[in-house]
Length: 435
Ligand SMILES: [Fe+2]
Ligand SMILES: [Fe+2]
Image 1 (cartoon, rainbow, N blue to C red):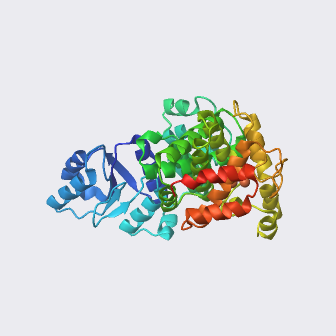
Image 2: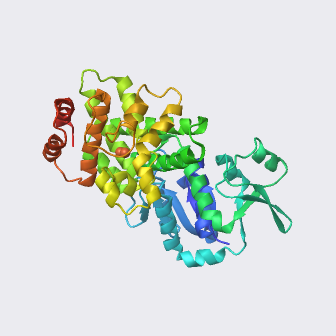
Image 3: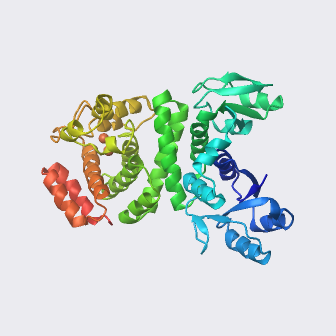
């Protein structure tokens, strides 16, 4: 059987690449951690390699370029996929190492594997997964089986936490493989991948990879909140995400560039909305006399949670009773959208040490005191922070809907939407935002 040579030095990335390449395309991989090690390996093993996946740069080394030069010298004609950031001319480049789907597609194309062929390859009803991957998760999204000769016995129910020491006990008993129903394999692998990506250290990632990692992590958290609500696990993940979004907002100096980056990395609407909203809110906070780091923390917390009860782009875009009524959503989903401010606020009430008043602002973010439905008539007793948030959200909505809109056009529209002085004084602060 031919192998794929992976040239990568990050063990976490290596881990989910291997799992995905195996599950989606049936590929077995061997890893080398530098171009030098890969070149040496190829001296004796090149006949066994059918594809090379190499990171563009490892540390300061131009890994892909060096390896390509070596392949030329050795006259080896093996397809190569380069993982960015960075581009090597005339080679297939995956711009962002966390875009697994793009990598899988590129690998399938390089090896001429079609989805149909891949599905036909999986013959057994139970799909083997190395035990080691279960260390990345606390529970499985599907039932897990242990093999006993020809029988497969249920070992873990889906979505129930593994017992402490479960994996170590298996390994201690020499059990290296667990099994899942073959129909569950893509869900399972997507979940393990999301967990591994969410656990990556943001400081090790490029700007584009950061965007992908946060996006994956938010989606994972939304699912976990539905499953288990607020607990130590979800609190930890939420804090990590809020910090990453705040950092991204501060690092990116120009709004349109940030928006472009989010779009080119195919960020979900929910993340894009939260990221831009955090940026815009920070701008207001930094330009008012009572703005300080505590307020910054509060608004980033609110921006993160306010729509978290929603499930997709269609639901997130609804912002009036009229739009909700005319949407194609089912009655159940309409109720979810109607109640989302209240539901999101409920998460906060259970969140330990949540910023003071955050739940109230989330509950009122569509203008209704109790968090149900939408209203354009904001009550007289709204706090200044709630008003900052509402103005920033309207600004965000406009620029995402029309990225070519000018600042003047946005400000003009905002002055039509918000007519009272307590709103207009914050609209004014947006005159200096760098679009
Ligand atoms: Fe929103
Ligand atoms: Fe909302």
